[in-house]
Length: 436
Ligand SMILES: Cc1cc2nc3c(=O)[nH]c(=O)nc-3n(C[C@H](O)[C@H](O)[C@H](O)COP(=O)(O)OP(=O)(O)OC[C@H]3O[C@@H](n4cnc5c(N)ncnc54)[C@H](O)[C@@H]3O)c2cc1C
Image (cartoon, rainbow, N blue to C red; front, side, top):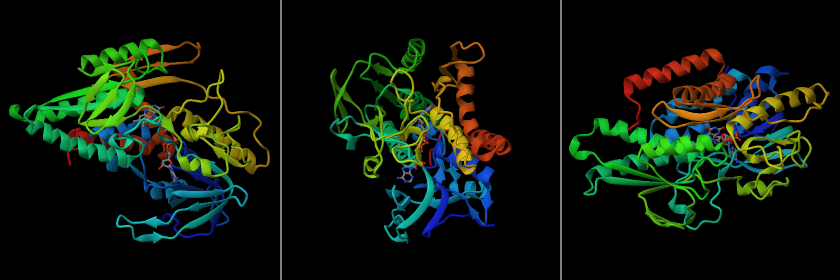
């Protein structure tokens, strides 16, 4: 049986999931496995603008060249075939809440030639899981910074980083400056991973070609990892400073210029600048006829339903109420819990017994990778309801296990073990750093 990758329209599906990321893909795979094909057709359709899936929390590794996106990526077409859902490649261009129809933009190849025309897909229920992009908060000069929104962004940064590495090893100064704006998990993990990549590279370079890597993390708030407990923030700062990373807290970026950041503490020169300071929904979210907040996220109720009944939103693109007037944080953990909740919602809807229970986000803590087989974080809840601090190798293993759990939800336990082993063996043979 061939994969059901659909280019042609019009089509109708009971459930259309837009976006196959951390949350959307888990939901599509689990719904597909449970509902399967009925009356000779798929009940569930997943739409994504990319042909392959990569778990977004690994993008800093792709950017540093320590993870190969093409080896790590999972083809949506194959996942669709194995999990019994349909897959449509394309970018959502419009959504008509009244006709209950989405429009996908025409598909073009790299040279801009048409592959498939604009397509319409109608649905009974839809789930928006289109994730988020970067929030520059109006800072001028955004075009001079790299972002890590999609695999292509991380790949582009990796290519330019390799060129910059080569340039630095031939330069009279023998140094390369990288400035990372934003001291959240992405900025901290990226800086640690860049140090790993640099160390790996230095191992293979002759003495005369070695160069210094100067990394600065610029954070407007008073400490790194501002959303996490102070103890974690302190440990992360110490670990990064030990790696000679310059941590500049309480520093606001006023402008991004080619080769430098203009900050409230003066100019920070940098050959490469990465913006990792905040997230925002796509501007297109405001044009779909659904209520959105200031960050372009779809406003949802306690059942994850948007302002239009039968259209749900989850993950980073959803503004979901949590505790003390706060929103559920934009994390893979939240997207995963929302996917599990929506699975129950659809079971109820299909049996005409709507689920009464509301979505309740449970914060199980956070883990941050600090390179060198080290991590730091906290685990919350458990039987005693206490908050545990974890660090070192244990924290790193727990961090890796989150990725494995995501794979387990989409490819099953056996395939996850095979994939993990294959990755380990590949690293042993080819080395950690992707240089080509
Ligand atoms: C470098 C980095 C490190 C991170 N580390 C962590 C971490 O350690 N722990 C943690 O909990 N979270 C982490 N996060 C955050 C986490 O990745 C997100 O919260 C999570 O991926 C959100 O899941 P999602 O399903 O909402 O969106 P995503 O995973 O971003 O998926 C969105 C999907 O929608 C598709 N899409 C978007 N727009 C369209 C469109 N118009 N048409 C069709 N398809 C579309 C995209 O191609 C993508 O596949 C990290 C993020 C980054 C960038």
